[in-house]
Amino acid sequence: MLALSRKKNEAIIINNNIEITILEIKGDQVKIGVSAPKEVPVYRKEVYVQIQEANKEATNAEGLEALKNLLG
Image (cartoon, rainbow, N blue to C red):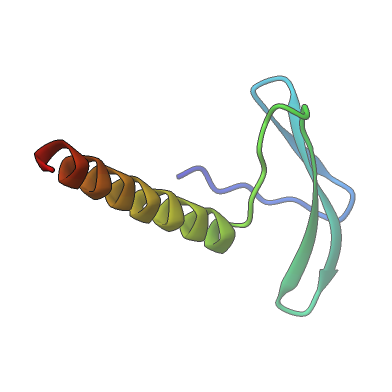
């Protein structure tokens, strides 16, 4: 993991087209802004994990249903 220090209104660039800017620092909370192309999905990690789990469950359920149909 790369750890960087940034101050308010400073930014980092990822892959030439994603910019992350520090908008506000208040206590132990940091507000960031993300500028990325529309085709690049940006999620909070906890939301991303939920999406991955839901996709895995859906795939498992669909696969089980397909197997039941195959075996008839």
